Amino acid sequence: GNQANEREYNSAVENGDRLFQRRQLFEARDAYQLALSHRPASSHPQERIREINEMLASSADMERFYASGHLDVSNVREQIFNNDEKRFFFVPFDRRRAGSYLMLEAENMEGKPLRLFINYGKDSQRQGGFSVNIGGHTGVTDLRIDISGQNRWITEDNNWISIYPLGGNIDLHNLKIHFGPGQ
Image (cartoon, rainbow, N blue to C red):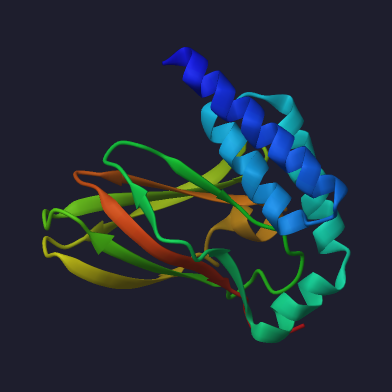
């Protein structure tokens, strides 16, 4: 019910604030994302996520991502239900967007053909999206999705990707952004 939701939200925010003060930025960001899943319009978690992304972007962490050639957006297994949009935040990157692509590993839970809508954006604004079909078989599908043709993917400092299955539930195993070539 609503009260339970409120409790979850408060506890996630308190946890996020505590982690943030300790400068455990990745963990804090996860906590604030959890808070947003209970109250999507809430400004405090959104502000904090933006702040954390800026802190991370200016740090050595980004250099490590560039060196590895990819950014892990999600590497926790996560069930995403039919007709339900799940948003994943990441640190915006300013180089090598051209030629970048998504690697997505998803398991079709029911074995019915389904469609995945993949959107991306910046803070509360959706910048673009597209959809891919997943065939009607159970098991893990590896998708390599070229997004460099998406104009607003290249021009905007996007900081989230969302996944919205239509026609069935999926189990997302991981989601990565691979940077394009070049500096």
